[in-house]
Length: 194
Figure 1 (cartoon, rainbow, N blue to C red):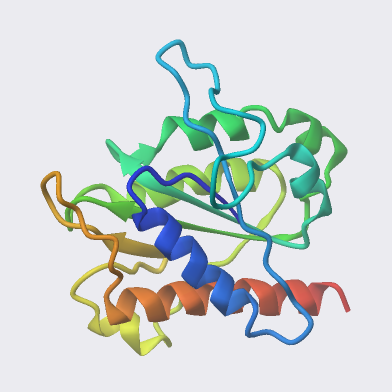
Figure 2 (cartoon, helix red, strand yellow):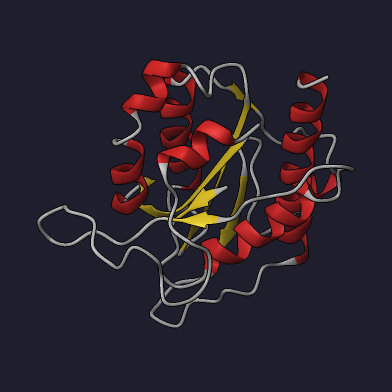
């Protein structure tokens, strides 16, 4: 799992997706983040973050059985730090190390109509280029029909709320759907590895 989180909402989703992954027998989740980028578009930060998950490396992608990407929404697109990381994965693409493996996406927005679905779709494009098999959330998940907050068939999502005091607290439906996404990804990876 590779994500970027600025205020903690996307990280909360990432942790819930990991919980779903680890519900599947014999499967463990590796949680990785990416550093922020500076105004000149170069990654910044230490080799190892001060706290939380370590930074993702190309080797993490080469070794994974599935990949889940997460990002806050920035004008209907993934945040620059995650895009910067993905743009550096051409070596993984050339090797085909992700080809045929399950992939999924999740996001967090400040408002209900803040571009969740377009952000999820933007994160799917590089996964398709890597030859991954996209995993979404089917409407057989009752929470997808009932949610008044986040959650889409394209992937898990969270509505943090407008203003500078955004909420990292996931609704019950958001938690359920993020966990269901992780479970689905891990289940598909297990079946593909048999």
